[in-house]
Length: 327
Image 1 (cartoon, rainbow, N blue to C red):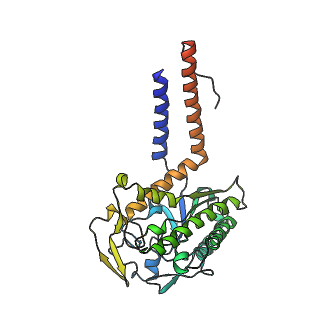
Image 2 (cartoon, rainbow, N blue to C red):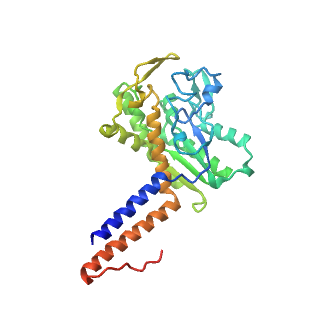
């Protein structure tokens, strides 16, 4: 009796071990977005003047690698720019104390298209990533979430036209928890727009017209994940209230010596520790969302059902056997 229960738990352990150690099924990441994904584009654009290195890490807007560098894929084609919006024709984004314009996501995709020979791409092994939206609300306080979401969906459509098969979109992070949010009015502004934005994005992606048999759109719930970390502070042991570096008028003041213990590196950005947690969560999400692992999970469920059905029949028949399932 107990041997069957033990076997089932063993299968669960092996399945979780497989997920934790398995690589996501992509060779290349093509990333579009803002400072959360920028790995040096603004740094190069400003002739290595912004962000200031050190303390910022090699052109990232944090103290180490960002989340896309934590997915276990070395071939990263990065088009993200700090300060970027969804579309410059909609809202212009800026960096370096709002003095230098940067390409929005739709412009980033156009740059990618212009410099890439599409006929040579292996779309089956390429993951396209979009993390964007925060700066639209930062630069334009009157913009509606439905308009920003429509702009994001236009970028998704652009990628689909190119031939993308796998696209990961993150929803809005909880901007209301950022250190730069100081007043109740600011908190309510960002909280409400985040909620409306994410609801609209979820509905919009479901309504998109695309070939569901050939294309996979992943929507990662970044909002809930980050709120969970902030709420579950005891398990993560991270400082959720303060930040490590103060950015003011183009200069950076160091306020802490242990940024790995913080959620926020400055008033606007996450630490590399947070990027690591986000990257790991996205990797797990991609693995458990893939057809291969859904199949593996189905097999696990079927085997567990076999074990428990066997256990029930053993109690009745006083004998041990396995149902002859075909999988």
